[in-house]
Amino acid sequence: MYMNDQEYFRSCIAKERHLARLLGHQHIEECYESAGTLWDNASALPQWTRDWRACGPLMTGYGISVVFGNEPLPAGSGSAHIGSTVVQFADHPTRDRAVMYGIVKELIFLLEHGKVKPVSP
Image 1 (cartoon, helix red, strand yellow):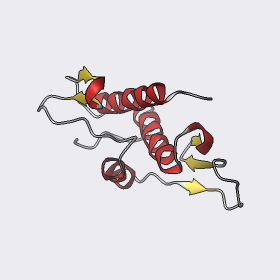
Image 2: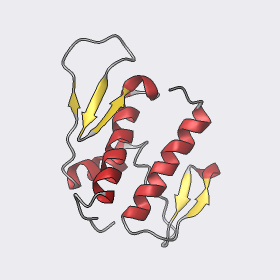
Image 3: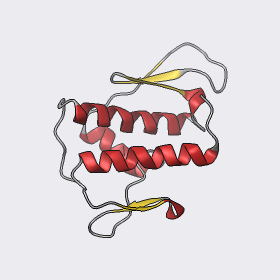
């Protein structure tokens, strides 16, 4: 699946907004030009799909594991299993971004299916 940079960026913002709502933030203002959205207290929406400083606490706070294949792979190929979510590295600009996107996608799945409860944002 190929997306241009703007489409990929918007898909990341959409996942971040979706997760923010599931975590209890209801007043999210759209502003794509400044890389995201703002919520109630006027702080920037965490860049969960784009920054390890935001994504790491989600991963550890919810106990989300990442499993990589151990076979040698050519650059740009391969995947990671994050719970029931599988991310293909080729669908993302970098392996890091693929894993962060997968963590957010898996947490959305877990929250929507009642497998975890939201932790206070």
